[in-house]
Amino acid sequence: MFKTDVERHLPSNAGIAIGPILFIIAILAILAAAIAAGSGSFTAGTSSESARTKASALIQIGENLRVGMDRLIQEGGYSLSGTTATYDINALNTTQLNALFSPVGGGISAPSAALSNTPGTDKWYYPLVGIPNLGTGDLQLAVLKIDPNTCDQINNKANGLTIDLTNNGSTAGVGVDLGDFTTASPGTASNWPANLTGKTIGCVHNTDATSLSSGYFFYEVLAFQ
Image 1 (cartoon, rainbow, N blue to C red):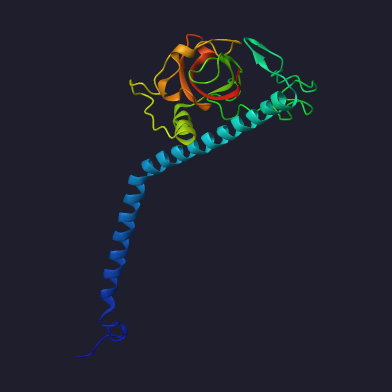
Image 2: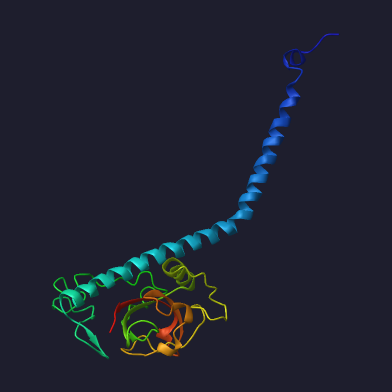
């Protein structure tokens, strides 16, 4: 029996190639499904990494503020006594010998609020606050409102605390009234979170009625008395 030209030139195994093609399509479909399923966990991982990065940066800013204050106290002889300080933490004052943010004073620049909970609205405050097991009176703090995830990371990195911010136990995550941080001397030693007593750096959840002072705050102790 005679074969046509097409039959003479078509290999006998030409139909077998469809098998590998279907296999590749199936693999691609599985990969697409896996990527779609994992996109949520990827987003969560990115958010956690962002909080860790912010926490590290804020801790570094706090340490820089502390270095500047140490320079004023140890080299300049300026101090804190009661609610009266002989040093100046006004960010607008940059020329005085007793000014933290003066090249001839503390020698540091005023910190940015870019890492705050609401950049452009939140800003750094410098209240005098009592913390149990630190000093004999109110302490000079630097505080900045931040988001709760970054707050948790700060307490973990700075103090080794793993804190559920929604927990009702005696932890730093529990909201307590710590006074109005926007004023000079809120005075809150009795309400300070148990897990952060004696800690010079950390993050607290303030429930003060003043909106600017309600939320999660990074803090660094700058001066004792």
